[in-house]
Length: 112
Length: 128
Image (tube, rainbow over all chains, first blue to last red):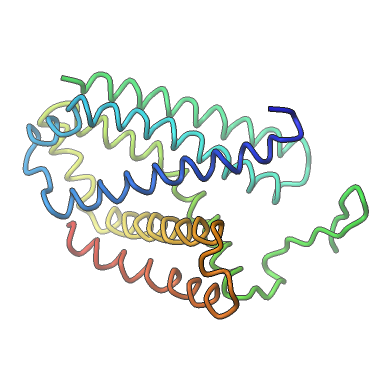
């Protein structure tokens, strides 16, 4: 996609990830309401299930992209000094990448 | 005072001085809740890692979530999640031209503003 279309790309990414994140959060909340895991073994079995693991890894990617687009919009609107803006964007970007890697390791270790 | 864009149009973003209509207020809270949720990501991963580390870690995660301060933070995060979710659904519907007319978009903004805190309190009561 051309440079001038990055705004459109961000717009599409934000909405596509939003749909997945929304559906997944509703699933989590409903599951937690209907059948909360009673103990460690059940919790581990739920999170460690291959299907859940895949869905969660996809969730991590979607969350990283969604949070990045959103935080980028906020910082670009409200932080005017260039150095501060670039610095904060870097902190948020690197922080999100670090979180995504950390979450991936946690999820891969939990796999059964 | 406000800054100007490159083609001379004013940008005025001082939230303390703008009197926002209800949908605008809801929209700002969509951003606030989004930023709040982003800050909670490392906290959530830490709890996930702890709870999956073994029966002791699982018990420790439960203890960490049990205090009144943790409950308060959870309530705040639950509100942020629900507000962001409802406002997000509202935006997705507006994108496909649902509820875009005058009384509707105002009513739906009120609905989001009210439903999120009410449901957050109810959910925290049921979940804990």
